[in-house]
Image (cartoon, one colour):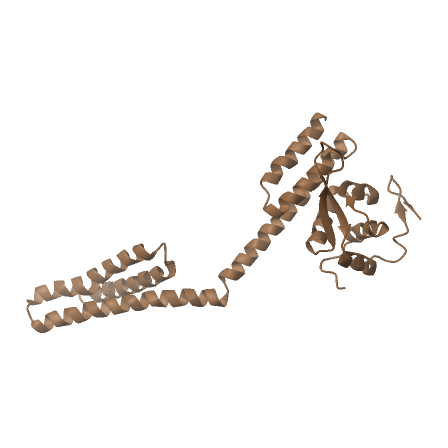
Length: 171
Length: 103
């Protein structure tokens, strides 16, 4: 076998390794034919043509897979499931904040605090504790239930924005 | 049968080549030589036809010690499809080795 033919065969062999599975069989089919092409230069041309065809084929396979994946990602059922999880995260955050506010109101009702202490208790119970809990739970859920964690974080961001505006307005 | 893909002149040529010997298994290079199509044009046509189940494929060892070759033949659907879409009269013509056409 001449050097040109060897190089052509080697090229197709190496290329077939990087193709998606369905393309590999076709690459092998074209590779086998190289041995039967009459003449070294025609064999090289056969290889180049096959390479171009295989590139086009693998691109079309990749695009097809990408298209299918996008359609799956955007399917109504999947979007609904994500929305449900995210709203669940927001609901949990709201329930936790309500518990914090109820605790704060209970403490105020007992009137154990001086006005300065009340202000500190207000910031601690209504902002610092919920925000810390939100960040901690979002970190804990991030890998397993990302959309749920996003819901909690979203609620946390809203609460923080609200608190900042409140403190700026009442400073 | 509605064509499941675009019927280019090259696809018609390949169908025509298969129609000449509809029951025989054929090699890619032989078809290429027969109809004068380069591998870059022939291979996508063969892949498309096989994907649409118009062509069946198999590996066959032709010589001992040599790796098997990929062979192609029209399926029943492929045969019907080819008969419907290859213009009549075309099958009888045959290309010569240098690209000319003889009847």
